[in-house]
Length: 324
Image (cartoon, rainbow, N blue to C red; front, top):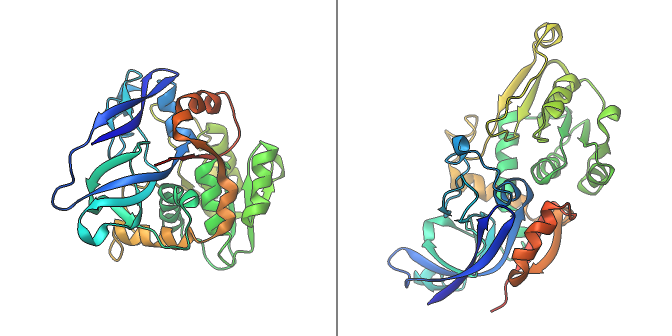
């Protein structure tokens, strides 16, 4: 049995490669992909060959093949949706989400699959990996009834965090980004979209997602006394300078790291990874999330799509579709 998979073979260049698949064994499933998503942040970093060796292990995806450091060849990605065609009988015919690279068919343990409800279409289900990150961030930040909250950075993660926050009874929610088009996305998600200079200070919690030192500093500046920044940005091996002088200490501010590999300690005694994914699945019922999606583009055109995205083609998460 053969499958086609997308590989980054050199900085700035990818191709589809054919590989042989084994039949699924006990506890495994053969999945036929119907859609996948291109995450602009990490996948474009891999596409450019810009992953430093010092952080390559930390960026490794669950079913990655090859080494991230050095620019390839590597099979990388983690937003795949499909239908189980063979394997464990209880799973055959189910629509599923999997943290798998772009590939038209693949065999994985059923423990790596999340069944999808009928109410969540394939194109939106590719966001589940990012929605799980957003759920964990809200568990880390613990926004309360009537809070004043900002999200700094309207990329894929920031927009997903804003969409979840919009479902809470907050006094104020702003999505902050210097790009007017990205800031305007806030209105479609249920937040007020603003440029950094127009953001309202005095926040109880700020979720920082811009992956820039300027964004982190702006997040700190937006906090009220005893406020907290939840830091979701991935900086790799870059140094991040911020001002921790009189205002930081005088107002007793806090910076909390948040990342998806560990369930938030505020929920870990009661929720595991499967429980967190169940929450993300409920969040995926919100059709406002479709505002994050671009495309679709056929899988055969993926080698041409990545360079276009790297050159600035619009869209936070580009959907890739698969024929039979």
